[in-house]
Image (cartoon, rainbow, N blue to C red; front, side, top):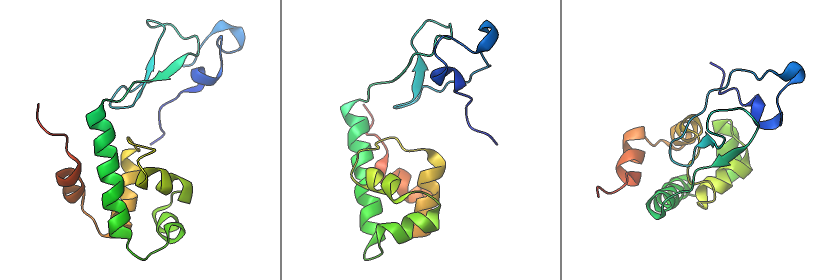
Length: 126
């Protein structure tokens, strides 16, 4: 299944002929949202993260780093089908809201279940 069609994010002012492609946006924690009230003018911004969401990303990174143990970042990233740079950003908390399937792939390589991740990284109830 293809990911979201965000071509209008890079085609400021629309595509040739004045029409924009259909776009699907997500607005979860750290997601992407339209800033123009519904029109397509190519402006996309990242939703600000709360301190709790940043903390959750840091906890996820620490968990993955600990589970990696003595294995190299390059080895784990390659086995998961992601770049070493992506794994580094997740482990250091610089990517506090990584894509679900990226996390699932890394977790599988490290022998972690999604239940383990959820239990370790769930936001505390307010």
